[in-house]
Image (cartoon, rainbow, N blue to C red; front, side, top):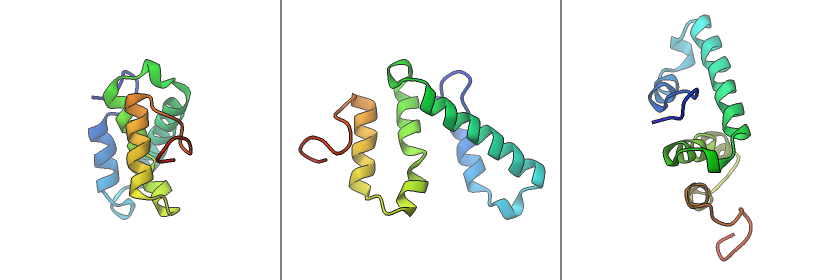
Length: 96
């Protein structure tokens, strides 16, 4: 369940599942606006104020962009773990 005012996880999955080529221009514009708002909300709200599920969602969501840039699955798993458990910042500790 997403936090109040945030795009629901089912809506995010639905947006991602349907290719842009099958969406109208209005749907594409709506996805862009709501996605941008949600990314800003993810960046602005401190993790301490987010629910556990929202922390996980925020940690996993940007992975599609970062994996295209060569981010490893281990790095992705560490990011999710750190977001949920409030662990060490990336690049520090035993695994960083």
